[in-house]
Amino acid sequence: MSDFEIQIERLSDRPQQFEFEVREGWWAAREQASETGTCQVEEPFRFRLRASRSRDDVLIEGEVDGRVGLECSRCAKRYSHALHDSYRLVLEPARGRAPLDPEGESGLARNGVCLGEDLEAGLYRGPVVRLDDFFGEVIALAMPIQPLCDEDCRGICPHCGMDRNGPADGRAPAPGCECEDEKIESPFAVLAKLKTGPGDAAGESD
Image 1: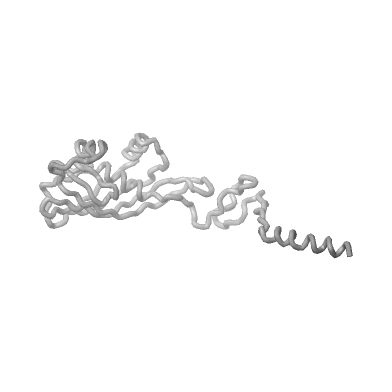
Image 2 (image 1 turned 120 degrees about the vertical axis):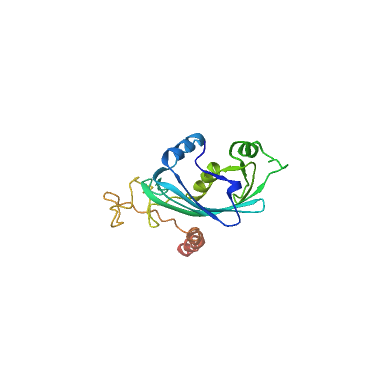
């Protein structure tokens, strides 16, 4: 049974506070099922949310915080990344409506909720909404698209393969890396040589 659930019948038009903690084991199992395995949970994800009901519609909104270990996309080093994001979800009763895709129907049967493509709207069915899939999507969207250990990370030298960052406090070139980036000559310089070449040759023949 899910630990992340809300009972619809207990909600009213006044927002109720909920707090859920997502631990490493839950996220690791989810990553294994999706064959990703891109991060390590260093601090549990904490979901603080407010849930209310307006007639039959359910509104869920709040924030998530956590800390994960990621691999820098430039230098490939592991680093600690603080995670923070906000979310908002409006659920309407499914009633006679059925999701167009099998995954959506499975979500309604399993968790009582079917998420929309934009993750801000969806359908629910039954007295209980289980938020496992929703929490998983919120965490995935909060992850950086291009993880960076530092905005000024210099990455790996393309010539010798060494880390260009050097000591963590100095950002100086790494010891042993004295490579210089190749300068690409402007194509206009090549055209200039072609233009002056015949003239020089004509001058020599006179």
